[in-house]
Image (cartoon, rainbow, N blue to C red):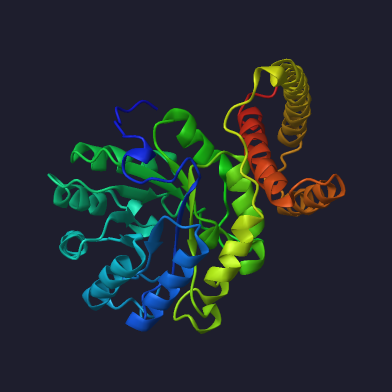
Length: 364
């Protein structure tokens, strides 16, 4: 997947003194007092570089709090004046862009529900022509890397060269530990394809619950993300939206102080040991592929047996048993059950494809 996306380095539009970028603030701007008190708490703790707040809140269903709109933008102006923090809001329409810029918002972000629609992204791109403002783009709701890349291409086409990616996880088709499945491999693939695009983790929307924020934040730092966007509220339990995933400014500071930021590079002294470990990984990967090839050979035999005895390829009881047992095996081996479940979904789909292919062959 090739694309010409020119992006300026992160430090050209926000100064972080070499530390990860931290964007923090309430899910929703509810009142002027709430915004100012939260902003001051965040500023006093010294971790954040940008204050975020939801002004327009696109909700899944009508009837939920959908933001104060333009009324909240002067609150952000005041927060910026009192704390010195830059401000960031989500925009979903050209009118949102116009109003945000009118009130001096420093950074815009495009939400997951907007990224998924190329028509909406193009409307935003058209409204941004001739504007010099950083734009962060959240991954689409569904795990589609091409859609995410397409959004960057459209915004870049408008002349925006200050951009970043926000990884907020992907919607679940079934109940899992997290609100949104991280699917780290998709974000890593984006970074591999476009290393120039800063990658910002959104543990709040991945987690859905405060209890999981620290582990997801550490995982993002372990993967060398460029920053984090985390929801913080003066009184999270009373928040008008997403109460269960927000932290007080003090709790946020405590969590961040316990996060270990890894080195992006390594010293020459570690080179030989790293190469040795990587060689071991290469050998293990080859063994994994050899085992997978052996498994597919058995799958082919299974397909032949089903064909010869006129048995349907898909056996739901068998798939349910595989789904449950492999997750249990993963736990016993100290592996993430969610990752193993996703892996075996792919393996099972390939097994079905192979058996279907065999079933359609002439019986020798």
